[in-house]
Amino acid sequence: MTDAVTDVTLRPRLHVGLTGGIAAGKSAVAAELERCGALLVDSDALARLVLEPGTEGLAAVQDAFGDRVIAADGSLDRAALAQIVFADPAARQRLNGIVHPRVRRMAREIVEQAGQDAVVVQDVPLLVETGQADAFDLVIVVEAPAEERIRRMVEDRGMTREDALARMAAQATDEERAAVADVVIVNDGDLDRLREITRRVWEGMAA
Image (cartoon, rainbow, N blue to C red; front, side, top):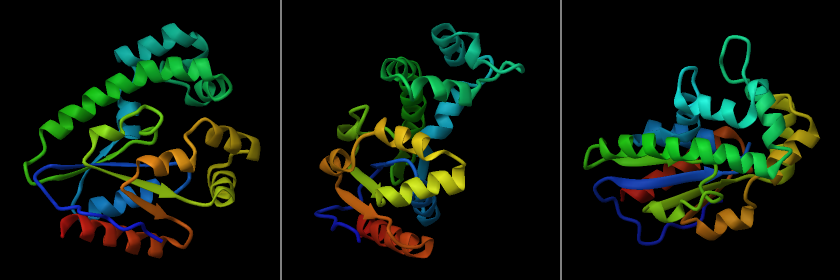
């Protein structure tokens, strides 16, 4: 099921925000939009870049959380950091304050360099939580049933059910995401169906 797109026309440098809860299928939608011709800006990939060894971002994380989040080779121990921030909202907010401004700056540079006829899709997992909806011409939200998302995290990512629930609780609710959405893609079928729905959304943007 896909919500209708109302009065959406392609215009130079259409800037689209793509978001969705963990394991909802957002990455598959992003990949399909890129295949359709979008310029994809992946916030998760940028977040990894700003925390690479030797960056000021990683130094700031080490200052905030200590050597316990640094692996023996000097890289970020993401599992150790996740254990901290998903159990402590204040710690998560502290981490977000380090990572998000740097990611936004890198994303802004990519968008500014895009061609005037580009459709830029920015994949932002925490778009709602960070109050960025107004920065986009169009917001696409990907949803999936909660139990299906939990199943994917447990079976595909090796999480415990408790960890999966904690990750979901740390994010916005479906209702909060829907409140800022121009388009909602409900991912309750197989991958082929999700790709078909995504292509229809693309066609609606490009019409």
